[in-house]
Image (cartoon, rainbow, N blue to C red; front, side):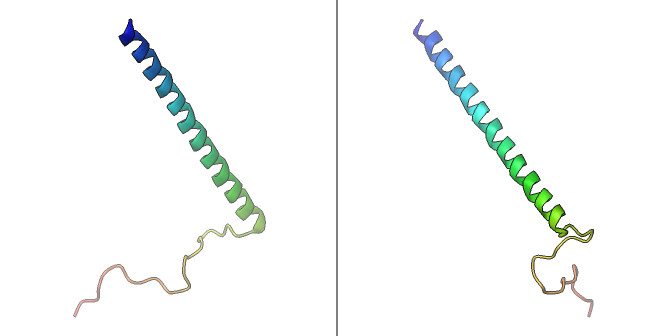
Length: 65
């Protein structure tokens, strides 16, 4: 009987953890959607995207000698 109670407690704990994980992912999706909507409304969503720095992009490969 003791093992059954332990199994039930563990099962309930896993269910709670899964629910917390789902809520966290849902909140993250909501924040991302809100951020995208804000960028879209402010006109910052250009087709090229934005660079993280004003520096020009470096070449992928080094020049041949």
